[in-house]
Amino acid sequence: QVQLIESGGGLAQAGGSLRLSCATSGLTLSAYTMGWFRQAPGKEREFVAAHSWSGAATNYGGSVQGRFTISRDSAKSTVYLQMNSLKPEDTAVYYCAASAWPSAQTERAAYLYWGQGTHVTVSS
Picture (spheres, rainbow, N blue to C red):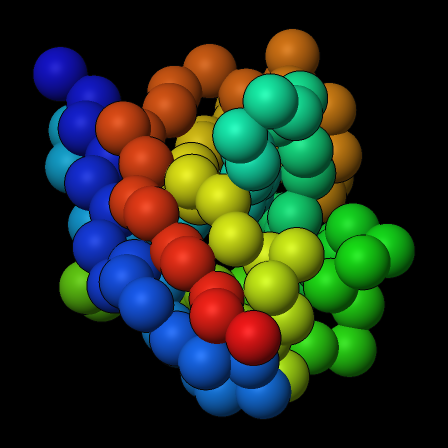
């Protein structure tokens, strides 16, 4: 059974940082492209970042480019999202997801497995 469990969310001030973690089990992390998505209240779930299974490619949503960094530690079966220079508009529930596609996918439909999400609130 595949499980993705996010942690690290919470309250941060604008300009601050948070690091989200996604602990995986039931899958071989190095065989999956991993992604982060987010959903703000009343909005569609949107792509944040992706890290291809080979580690050769990453992809970022336009609103987080240059501020967020996705990485993985296959030995720990964990994926990370380092979030710097946070803005109030980054407030959302953040979801970790796994895709069997080899490239850094940006579409929700490409992802097979999803976590339950972790809340991030950024105050101004």
